[in-house]
Length: 259
Image (cartoon, rainbow, N blue to C red):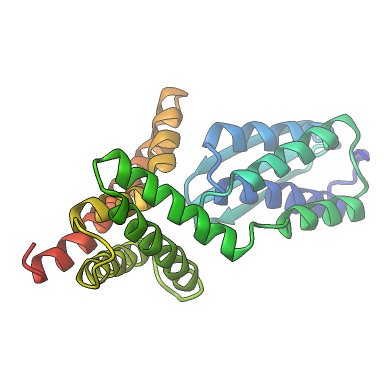
């Protein structure tokens, strides 16, 4: 499917909205700015737009495209959340390649984007198990004993549940990180008091590693290296603030406990 001369009205607006949906999925799922802009530019070219200009930062996408016949269309998408979902990024990339090779009709494009949006996520028990294993591994890496690893696994699984529950509430990312880190510290202290763990600091280190925004920091540095300075600085500030919120949550509990 390609735009025809003079068809830059409702058809062009609908196509642009679907293309923006794909850009939103990429940015929300943790993709870097350069990937979002490159994907949207290629999709606009595949669907017959004569030119596409994309401006992306961590909280917004602005897409301006010139349809055949000279009409210029502009749409903006506000991004209100950011998470790490590399599976979604991979699905959008795969769909983008297929569309560039063989564009779908508008109805098929909408269905394909919705299928990506509704892509199957890992079940909650798998996510809890993964959090537990990673937390236990870091606890052992930093010198914790076997009992500390067990306590870290339990508190990591509880942390996964707390994060899942918190994301259903109208909480900002900073407040969510602060509350969940405080909850993880309380869980670690409780497990030590129950005799499951031995060293609360080793358990807490394992839990902290689950909340450190490592991907956000890496993506922000990559954006700056690629020349997207504004987006890189915004991402860097966001990652630093999240790390400070995590540290504050653990620190409040430790100070109250006399640690």
